[in-house]
Amino acid sequence: MSETLHVALLIETSREYGRALLRGVARYNQQHGPWSLFFKPHGWGDPPPKWLTEWKGDGILARIGNKRMLEAVKKTKLPAIDLQGVMGPAAGLPFIGVDNAQVARHAAQHLLDRGFTRFGFVGLPHGEHPHMDERCEHFKRIVAEAGHPCDVFEPKRVRGKPVAWEQQQHAIADWLKRLPKPVGVMACHDDRGHQVIDAARRAGVLIPDEVAIVSVDNDEHLCSLAATPLSSVDVNPQRIGYDAAAMLHQMMTDRKFKPPAEPVFIPPRGVVTRRSTEVLAMDDREIAATIRFIRENACNGITVEDVLDQVALSRSVLERRFKTLLGRTPKSEIMRVQLERARQLLTQTDMPLTTIAEKTGFSQVKYFCEVFRKKIGVTPGAFRKKDRGEA
Image 1 (cartoon, one colour):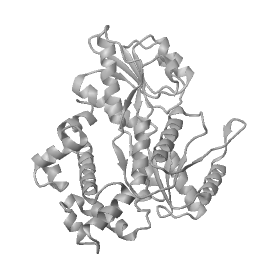
Image 2 (cartoon, rainbow, N blue to C red; image 1 turned 120 degrees about the vertical axis):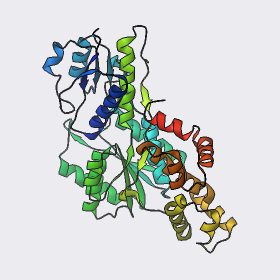
Image 3 (cartoon, rainbow, N blue to C red; image 1 turned 90 degrees about the vertical axis):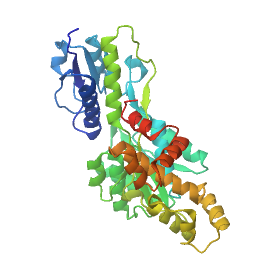
């Protein structure tokens, strides 16, 4: 093995997910390299590059979507990590990817927090992509545990092939019309979410008032391209790329290191909220207005007394009705909103903790750190490092 490690990146640049993986690899390389990176832009599903058969390197990071690519990678007999996972355990390569159980939990909780009691899921034809099927099954289970039904849109295939875009849109539109409303819908990824929003417009269904939609991947271009900007789960692909690079480094430099036989799943950051879910689907208008007030002002340091000033209800009545609808008290909701904003600032900015404490309504940074550790389980600093793969 040469002194400078040579690593091939078989990761597509046609989509934001792949580009974010590459940014994670680049960050690891900047901190722990330098590697010599062999990379040529390509799309997902492209055939194995011809140069791979003659390439003399030390390791490979690849998004393997078919048997041809898998065979080409394994034929090199180099340390390799799969960042796609569609080939399953039979691929015989270490896999690092998205924790789909947590993705579904974030999406479901996002809709539950908005008061929805009816749900739907739009995925791909069953069996076409195992990860999308996993998201569906987890989402159905989570809303069922909360005591609510979930209607699944079943995409059709004709002679083994997907139907044309226009036919799909008509089918989704008809499905949306039939759903009891208001309803919270999870789409398996941003492409599908974009389709659902377009189909809703065709069906004359109002978003988010009648149908609220949350998808997965947080591809900002796709989410903003939709007629109604799309809320989406940020699956933290940069962290996946960083951790994959770290594991590959061990595989290339330590002959005794054995990569995990089981898949490694990275938790998502959470939901990035846009207009497609900016709604409260509940009949109790007083409590809906109270929740809206809390979510708009929690980071200004408000207390329950400030909330009570906004409603003509006693504290006991407010807390009883609040708990019936959301399963928590007004005080807990204030704290939840503060901590959720803190998590966003920790992962998406380099702000110091003193500034984050101030911007999330905590009177002192010490108190902020104590509450964060008690509720989240780690300190804010450790949470930030873990999100970036540095812990």
